[in-house]
Amino acid sequence: MAIFHYNQERLFRKDPDIHLMHWGKEDCKPGHTVGPGVRDMYKIHFIHKGTGFVRIGNGTHQLNPGQAFLIHPHVITYYEADQADPWTYSWFGFQGAQVESILSRTRLSPEQPVFSMDRKVMPTMYEQLTDANAHAHSADLQLKVIMYECMTALLEVAPASSVGDVLPNRWDSYMIQSMEFIHAHYNEPISIEGLAALLKLDRKYFSAIFKEATGLPPQQYLLQYRMNKASELLEKSNYAIGEIANSVGYQDQLIFSKMFKRVKGVSPKHFRNQISQNA
Figure 1 (cartoon, rainbow, N blue to C red):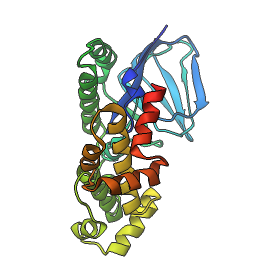
Figure 2 (cartoon, one colour):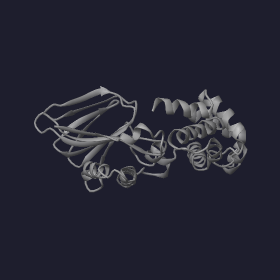
Figure 3 (tube, rainbow, N blue to C red):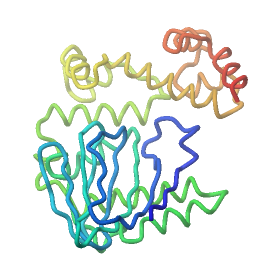
């Protein structure tokens, strides 16, 4: 029997650092299969008892109790319970702006998705999440704490084997540092020249490798990130537009409104009115 839970907070929180989407637990029938298919989020399955196998990409892996596997977004995945000893597993799906950075510090990948976590978090993860979700006034914070505990445990049980695995080259190091800086300081005056200087890189070279990594020039990425944060504030708060402008790095409300309309297609006031009408 399968038991599913969905995190209703996902309906109004967009692009947080790390966010739980859903979780569940299932006693699978012999030969029970899932897929082949793809997901739009990360998903971890933990095996409580029984056995089965998972096929991710071109690799097939047999799993036993105490082991878990990580599904990456947009990677074809198929898994099947053993006919004689079908597995019972729990799972949780998650996404967020910091997930990729966190997982880059582990050895986990579509080619190496399996890890052991029989003494760390996962055996009771389902019960912890369900219990936390029952606390109406603090569920969001409790769920986030559990997710960060799980990510911390992942770094401990499946660490990258060397610094080279975490940062295969200096180019990746620059990207991680620049993204972390933008996400932490987007509400402050940021210049691309200053960010490049902080990394001790030529501005043109920095802009080129940043665009190659993200698909956007750094100034455009910063603009998009700020406007996404502004959209969240317009949707979830009653702050004045001038206050929101200051909160995302604009002292001039008129410039903020112009940039917002350029990115979102409507003015901040119109955007907020649309949210109110659709509520």
